[in-house]
Length: 451
Image (cartoon, rainbow, N blue to C red; front, side, top):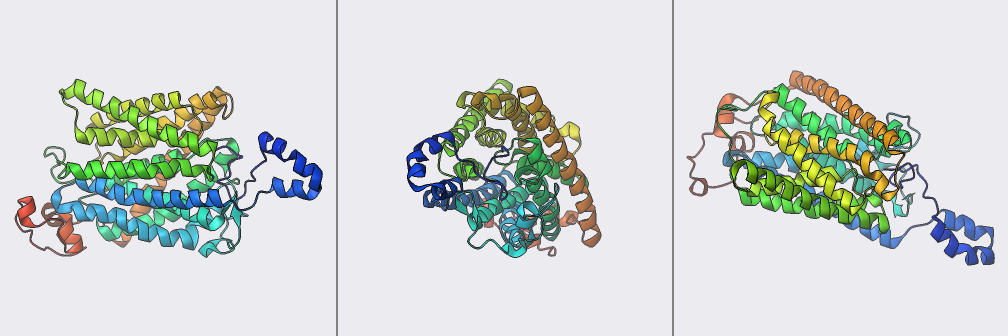
């Protein structure tokens, strides 16, 4: 996001030269009052309609992620895996209203956090962000905060207590995500003022969630039997369905970040089509050269990686540059997955490899390729700013997540007993099963206690 991006509540949309040229006859006729009115555009119903639709598209991404993650786990833990995404909607939805939005975008803050003047969404009635109601902007941003937390769950599935995840998630949203959003997207934020480019969340969402997921995997320890006994995805069609819904919703995620229905949204939309397509083909090519067979899970993973990589760059680079970013993101993430075991952490669903690594690649290539649309500073200078934003996000989210997990562990155990992990998380945590015994071929699990 550039400093003139209307995403910030505190930023003012300047009148473009083309608009000014068209407005000159009217200005001459009506005088200074017309000039003032054009300099501060009012509510635009078309932009508002687009943003309402975009917010709904982004909300759909979290159930899509639940399907994607759920299909990748064991059958006896599918509900618990999906519930970690679903509960993020309820938890973050309330916390964002209470304080998260104000910490991220509250006016009168400093370089590191907004004020609490908008706690409870106070003071937003009849206010505009650009040409849309600020309530719509707040709702759109809530969807980002929701999926950021849900992404982390993929690293801790099949062993983290549900209650511990909820407690950690609430603290993470308020103390890590919201300040990072302020740094990058508020006009007061220090990375915003440095000129960091992150159009739709490469650093704020994917890098922060990726490194937080890796830290959580280290703190919890590996799943029982890892890595000797492979954990095979139990339902690949669910994975493909979830990936498709993510791609669909991601159009609102990226193109909606323009906060208006115009040329910027159009560029973000087309690059969000191109980069995942290139990433999918790249991933399948690597799989075919390695094992001789392209896989459905590989296709789904590749397109998600491409979506991650293009997110910070989607409105700053040309369509051909989107191909480069998608392919590079897929190559880096594929290599990270192959090296996973060397890290010594059981990041169950490769959150860091797919979101953290692809997010880093995307953030850096944003700086390297923004010149293709005339965005940003000179390449060398912009690259330094992008490195700074990546390093700051990794350090703050990584260290902060470690601290929060340790705090939560004092209040409640982070991990379920081994007996519950063996039986599966669904019965132990929710007293439910995703499938009947005849559907899975599994014996009826014995209830061994709740969360």
